[in-house]
Image (tube, rainbow, N blue to C red; front, side):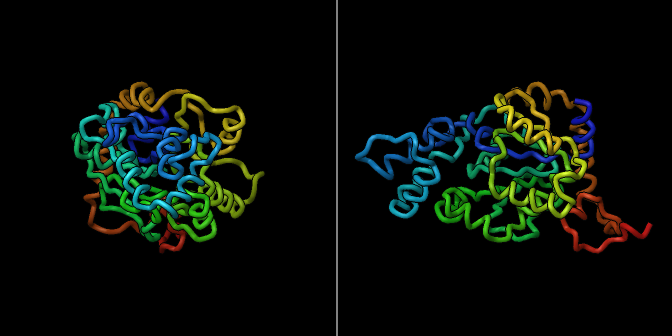
Length: 307
């Protein structure tokens, strides 16, 4: 708590969410947002209506097959399954979108943050963005809470999202400015990971590229302390993430809201005030930007080393 309170007072933490973060919300069908096996079971009748469900078939393969053979049915199904219902969004999500995050990255393509902005009274406007269609300058208006969808949004189904094996391969083969920015921020900002085990290939590709340029595996780890919120985590994954100064918090997303976010108190209010103050500052651009900004935009001009 002391570490996170200090970071939130400065508006520095970045939230990174996966499918496990959204699954407590209900969709347009009145069901919890499906993840993993649940989503495979929904896609199976679209692909193979006359065959018994095969649990060993990967979700990526099912999606790729459906995108080629049953595009309209796939789009309709996923849109309904991943559209969050305004009337059945749990109240504990409000605080997740109300505390002073620097920004939010999400692996999900659902519209949870859009619904939260409609249903809850939030201190900041939410700006939804897609990393698929964005350029290197992806950023919202000053003071907004940017929610960046790394794998695309509902409106980009089926070809404009990263879901199938070939879609991931295309992301890995090309230059991805958003993942490049994300990997830079992992070096300079504290993260809170919720609902993901961090097994995204593009993310690790860019982390390794950063680490190679920074001196290799023997370099002392100087990243800010980050946190992974998950009820279960394998010992091997714990050991791997500890190399990147990521601390495991064995709790659910709702538990993190109750035990941590609810207890930020004045730290959250001061963080919102600081973000608002910086957004309204328009006298003169800083000639000495923060180190985090230089890491994200290494080519920007500054007087950082001039004293």
